[in-house]
Length: 135
Image (cartoon, rainbow, N blue to C red; front, side, top):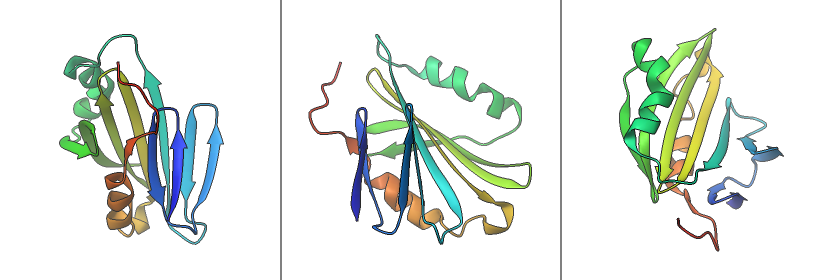
């Protein structure tokens, strides 16, 4: 396993995975796999509350998506999975104090569920990056 670190977060992915960073977004995928995991983070001036996250997921709620509570390392929030344009998508909105992580995973609709256990184990490794100060 290898460590991926950006901004205020870090996690581990299998050694075979490729990692690409562009601006504030980090994409990770297995070249022989099915989908792509993407993380981006934002640090706000004030603590992030439930209302902030609710505003972000409103379009999914309006579309009938079922949100579920998520906890990965010190980050908590909500997640949902849905189909769009022949793709399978999962999105997570996670926060810790004034830090927000937006995470997506997508793959072909035909591959839905094939990497779920792996993606969950990767997200379970999520933690604060070394030397990150809390608000």
